[in-house]
Length: 170
Image: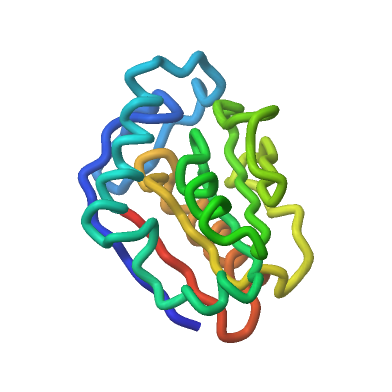
């Protein structure tokens, strides 16, 4: 398994959270709320910034897999910019996005893209070893350390195919 980490100083996108202390305990009481147009713009900006820096939407060496028809999951997909871009470029691949906030497109999208509303702090609803590539967008500020340790990392390892890649943008 390969893991790529991408650093970014991201702002607030999906959820208004308060940090209780420096150990990154996050108050999740206000997880469901209206998403501002500024937050949507910020999510799209982050995607296109990395695309400009890398010359493509990801940095992992997955071009051949995508051309052949792989399966990709975007955890915390937000507006779906990453998936929509990739889906148009790689029509043989299947792209799935999950996010707690339904700000992704539901009608106008390529046929090889699906979106699901899902709280990533809960077990993922996918079969074991079902994805070739898992992309984690800018979710660091929205999930506490306990959720990373007890749910997100174990679930990613469970659903990633052997030899698959994980890319974490933080």
